[in-house]
Amino acid sequence: MKLYDAAWAPSPRRVRIFLAEKGIEIERVMVDLRQNEQLSDPYLAVNPRGAVPALELDDGEVICESAAICRYFEAIQPEPSLFGETPLDIGRIESWTRRIESDGYAAAVYALRNARPNFEDRGLPGKWPSVPQIPELSARGVIMWEAFTEALDTWLKDREWIATDAYSFADISALVTIDFAKAAKLAVSEESRNILRWHAAASSRPSAAA
Image 1 (cartoon, rainbow, N blue to C red):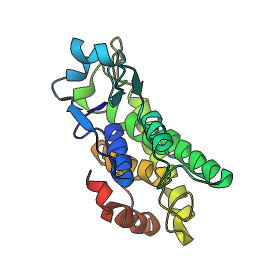
Image 2: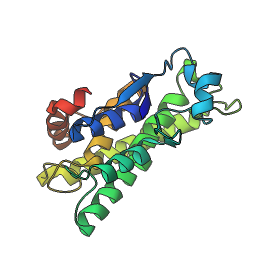
Image 3: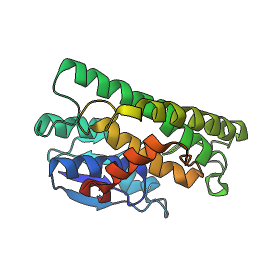
Image 4: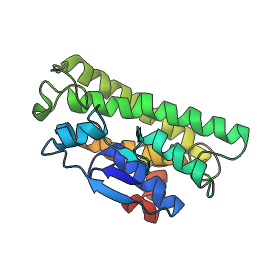
């Protein structure tokens, strides 16, 4: 099998961190997003949505979406568990992951794609018809980001990791989101000391450099 990857994009990075935590090595095929290689015919034959990452299995089937790819590898290699072992931990990790995606990651995407000139007519990632930028969505992203980081900082007050007592997929998702948000000029306030403490710990793990 092989993973279609991209060096600086957040979703492929989420998979790379996950695989590094698992100690799984896999063939990687780099897709150059700066050259719009994700929209080229060869890659669209792999993933017609024109988005990365994509996991091509040995039989030719392709799994798309970073969370789905990570779920696949969790099922293949359950240890160390990153999606939770008990029903309660599974629920906690899933709940926080969805919140991070809908409140934090979406905020960064809104702010980035609706404000940066290089995303003109590319308001959505992947292969779409021309999608104009909506400045109001960029402003909404800023509001969402501030609310998200304030809530996360409060939650982390007496916690080492986000969802459970152990590092999990929720932490991976948050790390990727916060680092990605910098491209949209969304930062974590210096007053958010709990997030900064958590971020330092998550960033110091060897997997963060994957």
